[in-house]
Length: 237
Image (cartoon, rainbow, N blue to C red; front, side):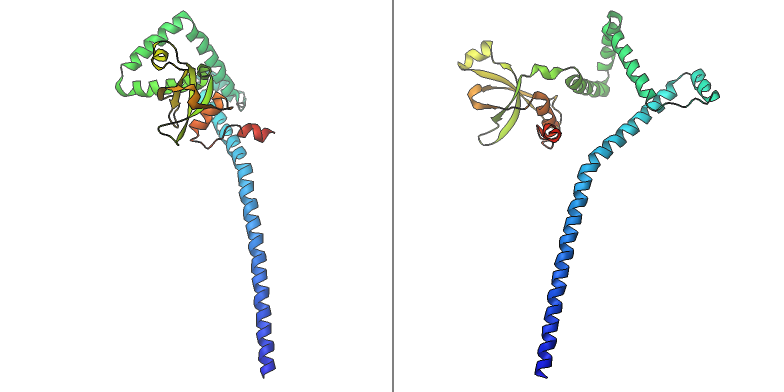
């Protein structure tokens, strides 16, 4: 009887060990599958979302441009069963914006632009929204980033805490005379809206110049630190 009990116990122990090994194997396989799944999502999701948004945007523009077409043109297309080429609306929109830009650059266009802005700035709520949107678009579409020469780091608002800043120029004139040393005019942007911020004067020796470009610095600020500078370059390599 004693030997039978020992054999049974040994068989149970072996079965238990086998089950634990199988469970460990399944856990490893599950962990690998989960890791592969997350990797697949990270690889495909940005590309898929980008193409999906581009697809939706193109068809949205096509729909908007189609509605703005003269009724005679729409009737002509329907009569002869001419399909709307995907992306044609976007091409028409870009061409229209180019012509609007050409008109706005002229004397008559500038007059109407100033008149329109004067009217908009007289409206209570709309003026604030218009001013904010204008600053954002001017920052990213008018090459205003060229007004900044480089990106630096400095300790602010106290020692041990670092912040990103954009150097606009060297401090000159009366402000420089007050300090008696080489100073920098540094713009500190707010996150995620870099069009607002404040200007500070910092000794050049207290700043650390970074290799990132101004555009990379702006992306870093807008993304709240999610998009790291040089990340796109490293991916391309």
